[in-house]
Length: 471
Ligand SMILES: [Fe+2]
Image 1 (cartoon, helix red, strand yellow):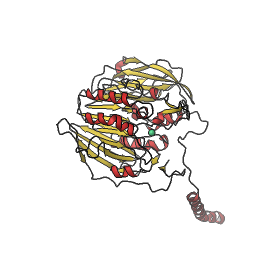
Image 2 (cartoon, protein in one colour):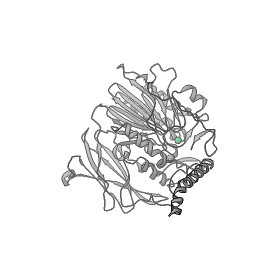
Image 3 (spheres, helix red, strand yellow):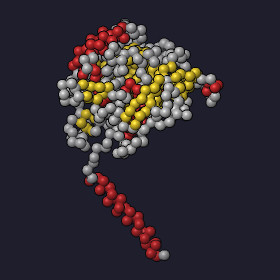
């Protein structure tokens, strides 16, 4: 008995020694960069199955009367159905007679085997109305989700904007998406500025696990909120690399993962589109094709045409690559050459961008009296760059080593913009005011409550790269 008591008395001290030894060991162990996905080598857990998954809603060209849904199943499912009815408090949705929309189906072969990607376009809806809908799998259905159509005319609109997610989506993007929804539970639209996944020329369909992780990170958002992504360079891969025939080829995932409006620039229909949402015209461009595939003239003409027909007070352009670089070793002169005259001509209010993994904001023209359009670069994911001297001298605020999201609120003549960090702290804020003269909106900075700009404090990333702060 005495012996047991003695062991009990010694045990806490012994444990303390072990704990201390453990913490010293972990502090001294060299740290290694984490892989891009959390999928174990050889795992096929993200193969398609009977249940509908990777479900995403996107706005129709007129978001007041329609939307479209993309989803995935295994290859047993061909032309599945979408059911929809006005949402009601009774669980008897549609009273047994929901409207049925038949999907179109295309196969997608990836490292996880063959999947069937489905797309259903729903039109003829009532504006400003809450609908319940679900999509079909193999002898099963998704949950019933809710989707509210946009108002017929201008009305207050809250949206979320995300820079590149790209890396370690499940591990580190999840928390940002979840934090964003705490700050904007009323958001009706989600913009993603491209490079949703890293892919990186790994081959056709090799990035399927990364797409699985993007949908895991965004879980609940693309089902509930109209999702409007721009294509990034990582949604292309290089073909004929290091030969005179080298070119970029669009990932087979891109045109299937989202059911985007099919109203794009001639020759770039899979990667450009526009839509109207409650008094705002949104135009989404393909910067990779402008920079690498001679798409500048065609996209600039199309942008001019789409903005010429804009009857609304507001216009927002989303493009992956920024007009002005954050990194010291990058420049995007063709974007400025082709797009800047059109942005000026139509008094575009905002250009939302990504690609250079940091934060930076500036007007298109340094001497712009009104301060518009405002150009923003932001990043969500794990890869973080170091900013170059040009960006540091011409942008404010700037940011490094910081995961961010944005909440935008359009309300009559005022747009309120907020950038928040992964923990919800206010990083940047401004307003644009419409003075009613038909010209550029007027910029009003909102300095109060912002935290100080964050800089990188590491010499190099864990992989030894001095141009990156983290990866
Ligand atoms: Fe990029």
